[in-house]
Length: 92
Image (cartoon, rainbow, N blue to C red):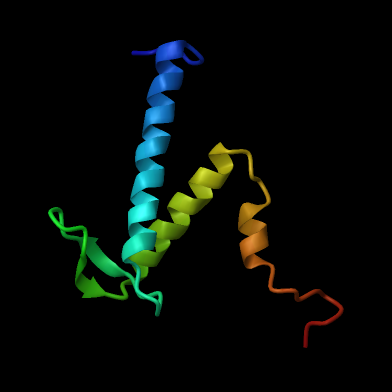
């Protein structure tokens, strides 16, 4: 057990952030130009495999991106993704 804010705690958190970022880079690297995600990645090659285009694959990427943004204090991240330039005055 590490005490919040201790050097060991901060090292553990930084290490976990690094692993998370590395995984997101892997997802980005292996995502094809069409943006379709696969269910899983081959543990030896990293190549996507399994069922294609499952909703939870996309939900997982969004959940990870939102958690990363929150951890880094980027509170407006989700709003910026959702902002399509539509306001109450221009909505049909």
